[in-house]
Structure formats: structure tokens, C-alpha cells
Length: 329
Image (cartoon, rainbow, N blue to C red; front, side, top):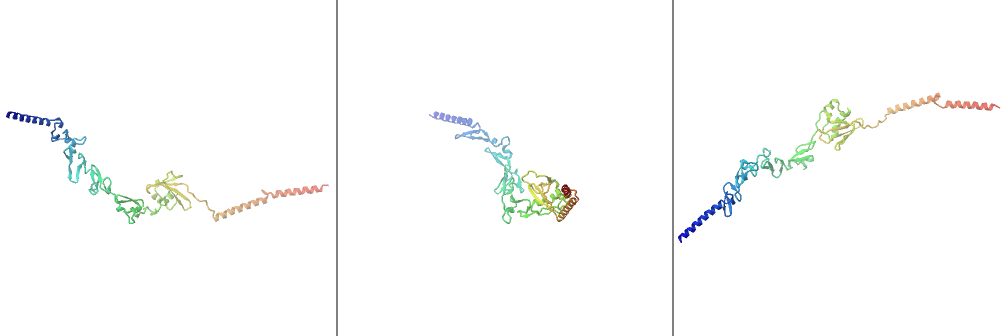
């Protein structure tokens, strides 16, 4: 009886050891883990349901043999990225491939600092109220409000909380009217671009106007003033008219560009009114008519062109004929 019990215990122990070895070396865990409670418990350095994957392989970016791009530790198949010296600036990304200091700078800080945004794998992610590549552009319009409550006084656009004024205006809120500075007799504070070009159009196109030759050469860019018979077919060109000292209309047009870039086209022919007769001219004309009348009367009295002398001769001959006829029995 005692020998039977001993034998049973030996069999149980042997089968238990053999069975445990069989489970440990089972292909279910790919030889890299132990089966417990129906699950693989992987050996160190291996992960997965069946312990088929190396842990460090899960922490390598495609095409990169370094673990976590050399910027982190692989823990349970995932990268824990290191910092760059402080907690605010770290490496990031699935494989720690991103440098949080690789983004654009503004205000001497990456992405303008934590108040404006943060760096995410080379791209700034801006906080609410900021935009731009470096989160440097504020979406607020507080600095663009003029005293009258209008954005940039209605004379510009608000960009990044700063006014960008149209030509002719300046100041923080575009409320200041700029004077156009020109040399010598170039008048400032023009209200119309056409008025601004008139002095140069007259001197370059017709050698008239207030500018003398020297001023015309110094003040007027002849390369931008073109004398033409007809305007170019450009619908955006603005046509200007000016009546000169002779009451002739000068017509020119300018392109729709900034003043210092526009071109001007001047019609070569001015439209002038018909001449009005002066009293002196009327006297001269009357004298000429009087001379012509006297000349015609002289010719008539002389018989060179008039008909009365011829008629008198005819009457005389007819009278002789009658006398001769009556005297014959």
C-alpha cells in the first residue's frame, strides 16, 4: 500500500515537471515566454500576445535603426522621449523624431513662447487669438481702433493688430494725411492723381506749363510719360482732362498703380476751340471788302467788264436805223 502511494506521487511529479517544460517551450509563445493561465508572459526584450516581437523593434521609425531616434527610451514597445534640458522643451513624436526647438521663433522664443503657442514636430500650434507660422500674428484689433471707433480710420486694414494704411495716410491708426513731397515747384497735398501729373504732362508733352526746361528734366520721369495717338486698350486706366492756358483740352490717362510705379499716356493732339474773331480782325475784314467793292465799280465805269457801254452803242445804232428808214420815201 505504501509503495503504491509512493509510485503515484512520483508519477504526478514527473508529469507535472514534463508538462511545465512542455508549456514553457510551447510554440504558442514563440519560445520567448511562458504560458500562464492561458496567456503568454513574455521574456524580457519581447512583447506581443504571443511574444513574437522584439520590444526595441517597435521603437524604431521606418528606415531608422536607432531606438526612439536616439532621443528616448523604449518601454513596453513605446518611446518615452527625453527633454532638451528642461521640462518645457522636449523631443516628441511616436519615435521621438521631433525636436520641439525646430519651429520658427518670434519674440526670441519658439512659436512666440507658451503664451502664444507651442512647437509640435516642426510646426507651431498657436493658442487661441494668435496665427502665423510662428504664432506672431495677433487676431486682436484693439491697437487698430481709431478715436472715431473705426478700424484704421477707414483708411487701411488691420493686420496682426497693426494698421496697414493706404497711400496718402499714415500714423498708428491711419488718421494722419500724408503730404506728397516733391522738389521745387511740385505742389504738395494734391487731392487727385490727375492734378499731380498735369505739370509734367504739359512740359513733357507740349513744352508748356509752369515748369521750365530744367525743372521738367529734374522733376518729371520721361520714361513713364508716353506720347500716343490713341490710348492703350487697358480698361483699368483712368482718363484725365485738363484745359491749358490756351483753352485747349489736354487728355491723358494713368495706370491703376501706386504713384511711383504708374505709367502715363498723353494724347499728342490737343482739342482746341475754333478761333473767335477780334474787333481788330473785323475792321481789317471790312476794309478788305470795301477795297474789293471799289475795284469792281472802277472796272464797270471803265467798260472793261460792265454791260452799260455796250447797250448804249446798240441803242445808238438802232436810232440811226430808224431815222434812215423813216427818211426813205
